[in-house]
Image (cartoon, rainbow, N blue to C red; front, side, top):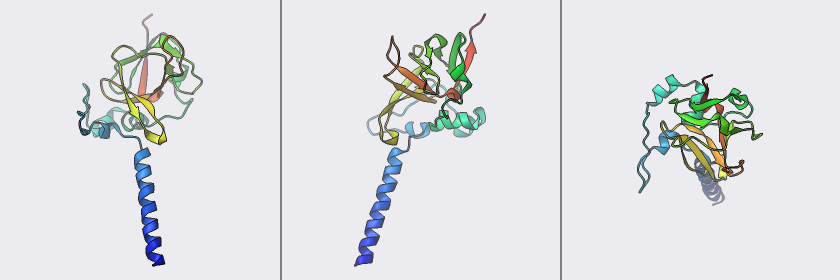
Length: 173
């Protein structure tokens, strides 16, 4: 009787741990594109197979853009980019942010107070036991980062982006 109880308890504990781990794991873009009951599947103008994305992106870019990874803070050269120009999606080259909206958030990631019109889409992210707003490129669905409500005026927003998810094009002289 004692071993049966121990077996049932350990099985239940294992299942609970697996369920918690699965709930906390962020959805990949491929998973997010699957239809959810009552909701249409996400579709994007620029699409590639997983293998094509792996060929187009560096392994680190693939991890961020396609697997919703996060780069280590203070590792992106774009964090220190202060020239006039435009920050665009590293996956499809869509212009995302004007350099004039960039500010130093002291978080270690390039931060902006507003995206360009029709450049990004957002969705709720419940990973890691918290609710955040995830930011994606509206053209290819690539994961860019998250947006928070602790930014400067005029918007009060902080678009905290992964530098690996973007490229920079300086303004013409």
